[in-house]
Length: 484
Image (tube, rainbow, N blue to C red; front, side, top):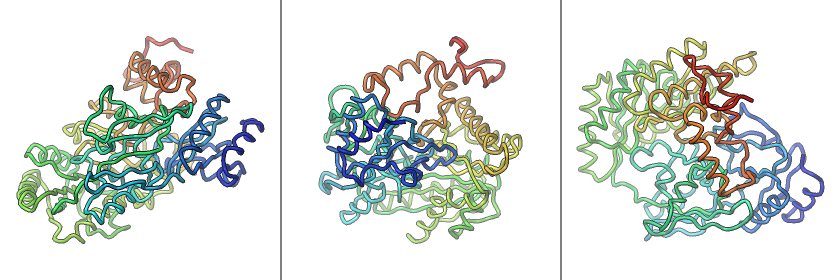
């Protein structure tokens, strides 16, 4: 619990409406989008500008009080979960677009600006911001940077790290860091990449300079249905091998297709096991050539039905089904557990087959929705938290999927981050020396571990404890570590 004396100092820094400590005001902040993890914060502060953020950080640093930064709360790994005895620093009120340069194709925005709002502001100049998470209507750019978010068009246009130029951030002591450059490169170490995906553990972001791209002359989507998930998975690699780099290459299995179609009425075929959406964009001639190639590849890969969007309205409708897949699947069961792992494209058929086998083993249905082009999986495990033991079974199933991703040569996260949800699987993917290096980087920015403590990078003793409870093939992860 935070002391009355500390809370009194905090209230003197901010207007009364910017400090919340009444129970009814705190409950809305007890979880992010991953609602299986909940913890009511001791206090919530909502600063209205960078100076107020710095003042809060200086007070917390001087008082040795931890700080958890939070954006729109749409995260899916419990990365912004409140910590006992900490201040929950909500940056939602820093929501101004400070500058938009259509000639230089950049925008300077505060961390609370919604992802989609950037493209909306740039639209009159025929520009847009490329990373487009499914939650783009609500998620904020500061959280996108913290998790290195992607989206359905990240295959061609990259993740957040590839679409930002500069960050302004505050250390835990309230000191300003200017990271990156408006130019194409900056001298010294690439701290911009380090900060992107750091999950609020190194500094608090207060300003982001993003790249804007010109709208392509033409964009067109090909929809392909398959009678076998493995065939669809193989088709993904075949498209890339044919020399086409789609703007987006997404895949859904039967359960996800049925849910999305019932919810959005996108015009999806329902008599198939898997669906691919492949979008190509560019100048007219380039798109025409790529569409022809993609259709040839899909036919050779065993597609049972191929459609090309004949209008912009149909293209958007095809994408609407995919972007609404998460809420659509929510209609199939009282709860679902959304995973996020990444694998090499060539491993898609094997991994999808193993997920199907594990679904039968755990007795829980799975809807697969994922960024097939870059191997970023989003299995949605359906369960009912009101049934004893189902949540725990879903968590074990999810952990096994992440470990399968590592086994296949991939990683435990593609864009949702590690947060608290995947911290055990960090012990599987990384060795003790690697984890020690991560802690050294953390200590360079935050030696007292006051920023988002307990998230993303596990303590070595925690890996020892976790490994003692999770034996795989007769081997314990990090058997060299002492047992506590």
